[in-house]
Amino acid sequence: MQTKHILGVLAGTAAVAVAAAAIAQSDAKARVDSAKAAGVVGEQADGFLGFVTASADPALKAAVAEINAGRAELYRKAAEKNGVSPAAAGAAAFETVVQAKLKPGEYYRPAGGGWMRK
Image (cartoon, rainbow, N blue to C red):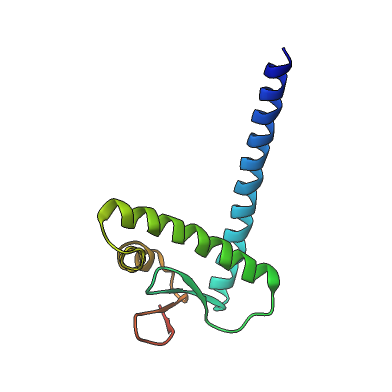
């Protein structure tokens, strides 16, 4: 009986942790989306977010880092699956997915170039 209780507590704790992570990711996305609309953060040709203008906001820096870490993991998995480097996977994601989702007025930085506004 004790084991079932412990397993139930662990499952409940894991569910709370997953929910907390989802909320944190949602908060990070909201911060980044707002910063993209304000022209502070933009998309880069390597598939990662970058700062168009300097930001002193630690919460925004953490949000960008969190999203970039998630993207790095996705690019690593895609690279393994397709036999390419993670850098190639990130660049391909920028070309095929990210560019298509850019909204008018948002910034992006093509390979070898400076920041441009869509």
